[in-house]
Image 1: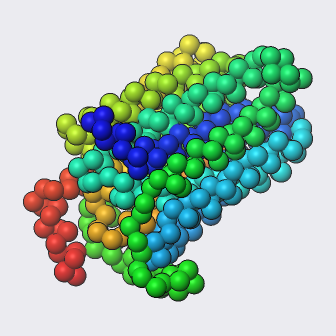
Image 2 (image 1 turned 90 degrees about the horizontal axis):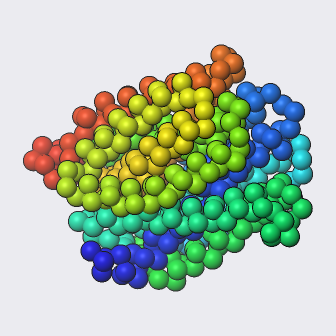
Length: 430
């Protein structure tokens, strides 16, 4: 097992999760929501700030959802998944670094740059996920996918720990105040993302695309195949059902990641405690993601995902009654135990359902469903917060998505079963 994790392509691929998780942790989940409400939206009612953040997340998700399947199809044609990953990562890096220049009260500029960074982050992940098929054999998917997520939690957590220390003790770093420390943290995230992108760019070799296909030709062919791919997805029963289930439950997962700190701020909990709880989540999630990879090997990825969904549902309902820092810490610990596992097993489970030679194209749809989920979830939170005036009601509404996703997932048969094999054969003949 150790040899698997030390293989250069596997380690280089997993280190990209280490790289971009700095954005997911410090920017998306940690500092940006709190800073957006208390610095860039200073003096605004918390429900208004929450709705603005929800709309920003929703816009970014919609753009990526629209682009993902087209980009995936193009990459499959010309074999440039790695180049696309690097290009979109650089867009995310630049958008993140520019947050340094946004002054107090300039919430619109902050939201715009956050959208740019989020689009770069999410679009690059289309190609990162597809590269799993280039660095691992099918039997290794669960462990390699979990390895990537575990390194992501560790790397993102280490940088986040430094960033939190900077905000608590800005004088130690020659900074005038916590606000300057937060803004500098965005620059550090951009640098971290850029540096640890390099191993993947240098060490991972992807399967070649079609010989002699230019980028322009691949673009035309990719767009032409988009409608055909939609028809193909519908022919693969298990794959189509899984995408629907994934869209529902990952919607709630992503919304909790992005809105948890904002929820704590809206409840009046101290920002320092919220960030400390988020930091703890990263280090709980590191071994837990690896454990879920092992669990997927033992009981099957689908059962592992269902177990995580059940925990998430109970945690979401509990969040409605939360009103103290110790309760927030307990909830963060529980979330950390299942967060990485649900994400990693979903990716590896889907990888087994993908038809040969369609990795980028079908992972484009996989990411499209995930990003459309980040349209619905944050908008749901925003609308419920504005219409009810209750942040508690908005977070509780996410339990519906977990339950619905779990019910649809129960209809998906594990790859390799006789029934699933018959369905796949029928789809290929169609």
